Image 1 (tube, rainbow, N blue to C red):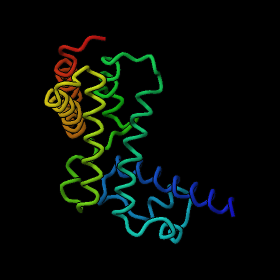
Image 2: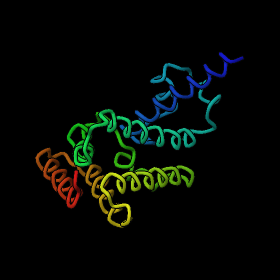
Image 3: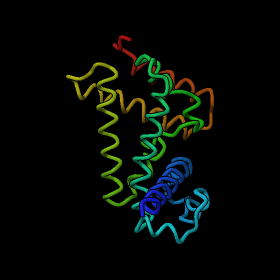
Image 4: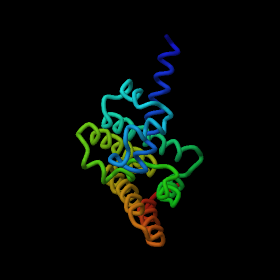
Length: 184
């Protein structure tokens, strides 16, 4: 019985990880259940053993993508706050080397159902808290929100435009804005 539970958990993790990768690259509407399951190496029928709908998967995938982006940023525990901000507002992030769902799915969220938007909201709140901790803005939530919006919004716009030189200027302006007043 233990193997079956472990196997089911592993399958669910494969599905969620595949969905997180695909949704953050293509968005909700451009990814089918078949795409997710094929990417996970599983059959479409297995999907319904784990999720009731594509929206349920999307909500879970947003959390998974956020955790993966966080893990990517924290792989080197010796990074200074400015290094983490630099990594988030980097060309490699813009090109999708790791994908924060806050930036990559921002415009997609307004079209989703309440459960998915609530999940996105919780991920955003956790990101604000992380920025507060990282930048020392623990007493000033509005400052942390401002820095979060510069990071998320800056990355979202940098991804949307096709002028690489302008995108780099935009990311630099955001890095400068977020790093103002931060001491490593």
